[in-house]
Image (cartoon, rainbow, N blue to C red):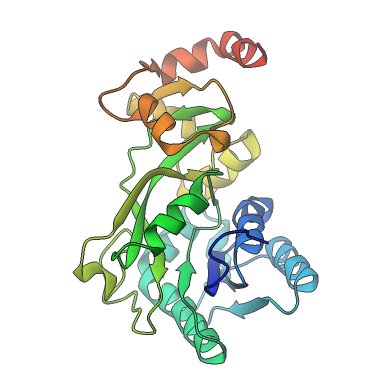
Length: 279
């Protein structure tokens, strides 16, 4: 369990679907750092449900599992891209179902802070210090900037993703259908949040298996897409999880201290860069 902010009640929540082992990145962090964890299954498969129940059985007194009541046309799950299209179309309702679970948990025991990552996200090791700074600030929610991995924890690419809301000083008024995009939920969206760039790690491209899952879910090709947008790649000197956000910023934020290579260069000369990692 955590060694920080022990005086407050921190609850974590994430929503899982058919991602299987990928969800362990989020769940492991939440159970390590939160007093209680809520897991919402929406459009799930048995493999993912079994993983969720593994955590439920391991942490029975700290876990709430809820099954989304949003309709699913199961036969369409075999179509590439359907899972994402359905989620995007129903996102507000699905998230509000999740918010309802948290509201009930709050009635059982008051919640001070809610941490709500996606199931394919985790955080850098320094993140607890950012949580402490946020808790001691007047801000009501945190907006986190992404770190996108490719192949390993030392290779990152420019995310082209705007920061998303992920941490909230909890209020039962939380309403995902009245908020804005990027998880800037109501009433938090009425004020500016606490921005912490380079703290949220997106693991969906960490290995070939994860990429294939993401490609099917989103109906896209990872390599073709990154070449098309001329993605920028950095080979870091160490595991990104062990680095500070300020150190990561020297690579992927202007003014950059370290220049990137193109994704095309990385893919075409992958053996060279893999050898560089091995030292």
